[in-house]
Length: 325
Image 1: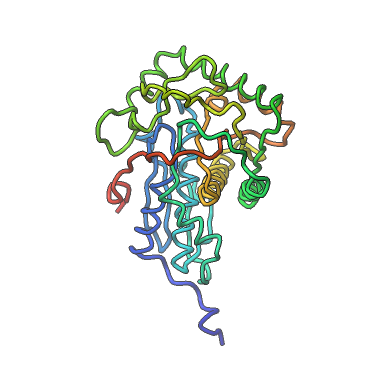
Image 2: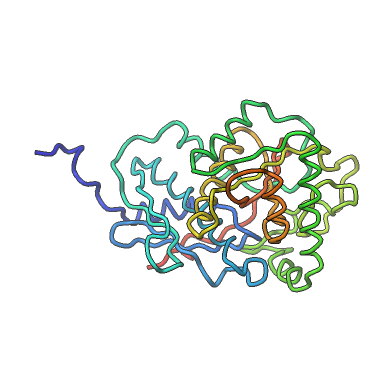
């Protein structure tokens, strides 16, 4: 006769759904568009894409939505794990492309130290678009970041040396110039940039300083904040390229989970991070980046990592606004 520990796990309830959503909404998304929804169905927590929040110009393919919802899925997994209710995860469980993941109750267990540490980092993680200090990231932390990607079935290539960094900067800069010449792209970006209070989009104060010609890496034009004297961007930033073996919708969701685990690992390690998506958004630049890495699979996001002054995170919608009843 089965013991209590061998019985089937009980279904998730409203408290589990709310905990998953509270964590999930803290995930990153392009222009802070927050393209996710959460639902309780048949005792499982589902993460769904919100097609009404897909960026019509910057994300015609839905890649950024799937990446963001993958990141939200990882946060939801952590929230359930720290409640002692880890999830069995199925990605793209239905023919409906809007259903990103289904989290079904797994066997109960206490959370691991890593789960607790990464969960605690969720509210502290945000994109830091300001210049970082020139202090190098130690090898131990670099290995931690790469291991975080591997644990989620992805890879993280940390660029070493100015030759690799200059090559990436050229690819990223070229892609950024393509996007800056697209008036519809720039109009959409401006629509998601806010001067006042808003529940989504990027506040101007969360943007970086006005770009300068000598900057190595491109910056989004989220604001017009002047650059403080002596506060140039770091001359040799630590850049990581995150990728996965394929480029199907499921692969992109996997990349989103890996991206969030890397970002939370960085936060837990005392690092700041910002995302550089321009070379992923422009197909020719992405292909050039793929060839330069000599990796199996496709790059899904680039990251700038380092030490910096803590910044201010972007706002989030209220939990009731993302729940489907």
